[in-house]
Length: 162
Image (cartoon, rainbow, N blue to C red; front, side, top):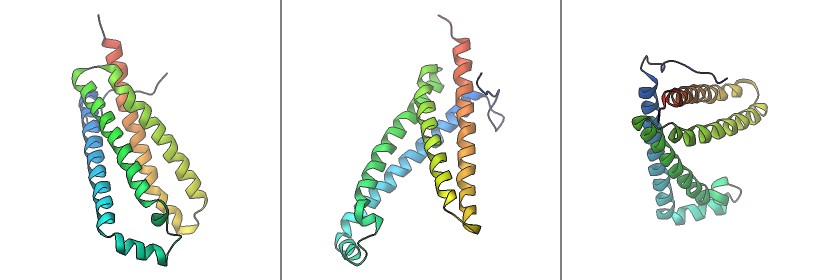
């Protein structure tokens, strides 16, 4: 039995909550794409300065795989935008299956982020541990978003008629 809610946190119905969640995710994805493209463009414009920096600090993470990380980030964010669009369209048109891609990718993402957070938290000591507090808050909020979207999906499945 899945954990469900009757309304979103702001008192609105599940459909409106899904539309808000999808819109926020879409805005975040587009902003991430723009920032990654700007970073790649800045790296291309400042190529000489970057080469000099990499000569001085050859072990720098950016020197080893910087542009590849930005390129992979852009690709992942493009997929994120498409999946957020599915969530918005599925919520608007009341199509339950269109919410599944968002639920699956968000579940995978949450699992990976939780694992990375636990691994990183074990390597922190003292006050450094408080760096994980905002990450844990985001994970909890994302989990709640998943519950809202899944609740709406189940509501749509129950009300589906031929």
